[in-house]
Amino acid sequence: MDQVEKSNLPSEKKVWIVVSCRQAQEVRARVELERQGFEVYLPMRLVSIRRPGRQANGARDLLARPFLPGYLFCRVGLALGDWRRIWSTFGVKGLLGSEERPAAVRDWVVDRIRDQEEGGFIKLGLEADRPAFDRGARVQLAGLDQVEGLFVEQIDERRASILVSLLGRDSRVTVDLAKLRSAGAK
Image (cartoon, rainbow, N blue to C red; front, side):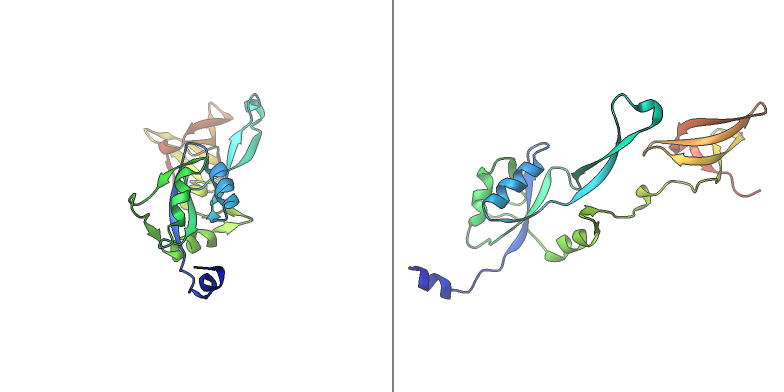
């Protein structure tokens, strides 16, 4: 079949598939797949990490990380079989689905993830993204009902800083977030 006949054929509808990547190779796989002409979507998020050697002052850096570690989306034509080239791409471990045919992901799934982006990064606004308590909220430590404090800030997903008054002195302490509960209003 020559070029003229190929151009008259209706183009196949492309679908999203999920590509499984080798450990920490999502960006490399994306670059290699794009180099081959594939449309690729690698949703990213920002994470806050402490700088090595700077724990005392709490300095933190924001780093871009894959939103779905180990996976990315690639748009392919299933009937044409162009997806078979993905298997031999650097950074790729495999495809979700069977060896005969990868599983298609509905467009709305990828669209919904893209809708959560702000400035190129996923910003879901989930409960986990918000502090467990508002600043200044009265809190108690589980098991120590007589010890009340004021919530200062959530340090990370497991720890929080609270202000407690003990022995006539205010002290800022770091506690396990799971052990905090609301003390209610006085």
